[in-house]
Image (cartoon, rainbow, N blue to C red):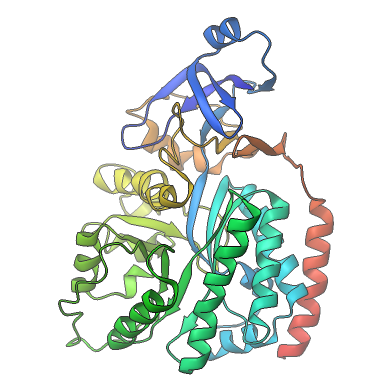
Length: 404
């Protein structure tokens, strides 16, 4: 299949902008990138996915989400106890439709890969299965864990971590290239962080990436120490804004991914560490920087680009293959078509400005994941979007009644 003609933004550390470009896809990967005319002449019998002059860029990666919390939108949940009440009330049906609605929202904003930290205080195995099935139906890439919390008993933490191992074996048998299992822990203290990471390694080994949902409440004197950690373990530290500086330095030295939600919370630590983007409980869409605080120019603008197009994809590449998050030969074919008509020069040197003055606000017209089209001309292919949101709303009504 040839996608084009379009303006191709290649992504990666040194992004290029190719006008009147096209991309050739064979099965799940990109085989050629070039001009539309050259690819059409070289491969006249290939199917076409018309680009119609739109902008083609790599799909975005949401590195930390709570997808089932999509059904909490509108509830005044603020404290950890409030969220525990919500999680306890979740049914498998709630999770299935809530996760679908959240993922559909993400597709509409160009998000093709999500790492979800799942919690439901009852029926953990059933609700995790429903979350996985929802992602399979949408056709997006998703990594799931059932999080073990420091507040859980040892038996509960072991059961939660064993869910990751069970899911990993099930996905390996199904040979589903888009879904992944992760181990997940939610520490509230630095000592708890060490303990939970150690437990995760003992139960799931180092083959599964570890998703750490930092919920730390520290005193100024507390320090991370010199814990070396397992060098073979791939770790995502969510809520990096809650971590002490020595933990940030430790994670950076190891090559782990640090993630933060929104833009304001991330600004303070962008000078010290490379960050990925996570939505947490918010909208499944990339954050727009606050232009009133000097984001438009200079190093901060470049940091925001790296956050969306370099750092998050780097973590995802460990699960989905080399080149993930770029439009280049050999890379996985995860791409997004945007209805964006740049009013000024659109090139590598102006890309960061276009990114948030227009590009990230542009409607998403098409989405491809692993070489398969999941949205075309603004219409989701694999699901009835109207049904998804109607069923999610019905679930939220019943869920809210149980909570209140």
